[in-house]
Image (cartoon, rainbow, N blue to C red; front, side, top):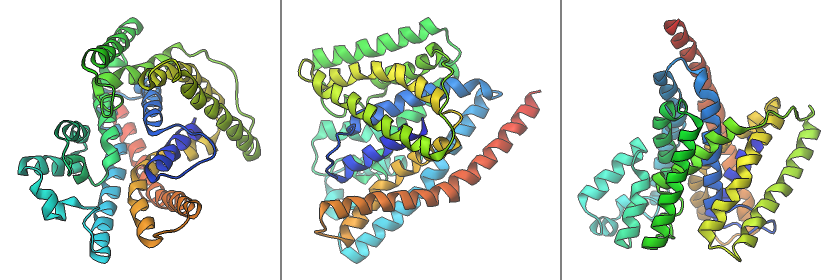
Amino acid sequence: MGFLRFYLAICVVFVHAGIPTWWTIHDGTQAVQIFFLISGFYMQMIYDKYPDKYAFWMSRLSRIYCPYFAVLLAALVTGVGLCVFQGSSGYLPLLDANSRSHNTTLGIVFTTITNFSVIGQDLTLFVADAGDSRFPLYRYLLIPQAWSVALELYFYALVPYLAKRRTNVLWGILCLSILARIVFYESFGLTRDPWIYRFFPFELAIFTAGMLAYRHAVDFKIKLPQGHFRYIIFCILSMFLFFCLRKSVSFSNRFLEYHYATLMSYVAWFFLVPQLFQITKQQRLDRFVGEFSYPIYLTHLIVIPVVDSLYDGANSLLRGGLIVFLTIAVSMGVMFGVIQPLDTWRQRFLQSRRALSN
């Protein structure tokens, strides 16, 4: 399932960079929400491997924050560099006196804190929605796409309690979350961004669906044949499957509003994600590819303005290729410089926790 995670991260890059494609891919809303479903699946699968909830939280927080802080520093350096060499504070609105005049000190302080805590970054998008400001608070975020990481953190806080609940309880939570979404959509007309995929009480249904997908998965004895060539063939066939699923949303949109069509499409992913995991779980290359999804997601909005500043006016194909190539290159630095050493520490930490609990 690592290839799926990599594919979704690249979809987000294409959307944010405005890279045109002849092959229909999932948009940002769907890519992020499928990530949420995958997260629920993995958290239900791995939670029992931890000796206690504190070990789980420490492991997940280190996995989230260490790469995040590395990229945050890179974003700050990049922003200052662009301000100095390009003479524009567009990447760092905090340096723009005009932008500061459009927001209160409290709002700027809050956003500055969320840059370091991640917690609350999603709220800046709702303030923008309500205030209709020329300089919404989310513009003060150095890694603005990390709002979804904030939702992941909220979910991690609940995992120790959700993972131990009975299956019918999880189904009840899923149904209540979907019902709340429908009520807000129909009664208050909140069918626009940020409500369709950034409001955690609504997204809890998708996280929970991932947990239920793991519990209900049929343990198919399907394994991917070993060998890189066979894996490449599998990825090509998977791309065609992803294409068909994306097209199904467009087709459903003829009969349903977009926000309902996307929700309906996740029924297919509910069944597909466990099977993709079963097929690829023994494939080391797939796990390696999947590990790049998080650094790609974190770094791409740093790479995009750098490419645009250096290659202003370049054709879209060259621009898109440079953005994707450099994003993957920077992600490799984060992967080998931060994530892999961190994983070694995490394994030692978990071993020590298990020893203490025995």
